[in-house]
Image 1 (cartoon, rainbow, N blue to C red):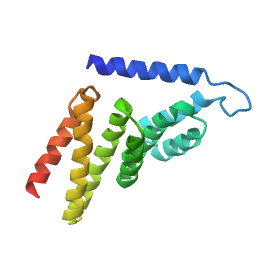
Image 2 (tube, rainbow, N blue to C red; image 1 turned 90 degrees about the vertical axis):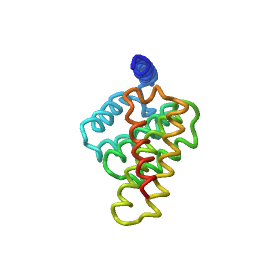
Image 3 (tube, rainbow, N blue to C red; image 1 turned 180 degrees about the horizontal axis):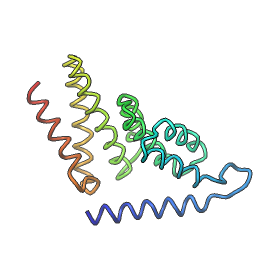
Image 4 (tube, one colour; image 1 turned 45 degrees about the vertical axis):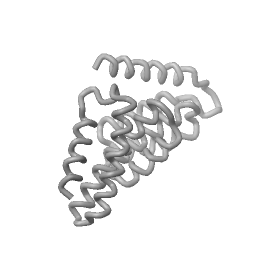
Length: 170
């Protein structure tokens, strides 16, 4: 748990440093931090349409923060129930990242794929649901193997266990 807190503080510090170093003026960087705060607040308060619009506006001017914003945009899609889009976005991001950034994207991808699989299975699409469960399992296995500190409370491990259980019943 302490490692996760340190990781969060490190991310927050880096984000503040990068956002604080953005130049103001005609380059479109003025207000980047304020715009990010709007996007993040919208995500955290459940205003997913606003979050997605805000993240989309920030992406072109994000520089090295672009992958982080892409992840948060994908997370907005996930929380809004757009599981296929969230899986697609997070999967694309995971393919372009390494290390912990890849693992964070895999967490969103695997979660979205699991939720999509449950919808497919509920709708009677057993084969498509099974394939999506297998994809979710693969994403979550890699996350848990490479960055277990990203799952301090065991929610991703629990999700993977639920996937394994469901696969055994299909």
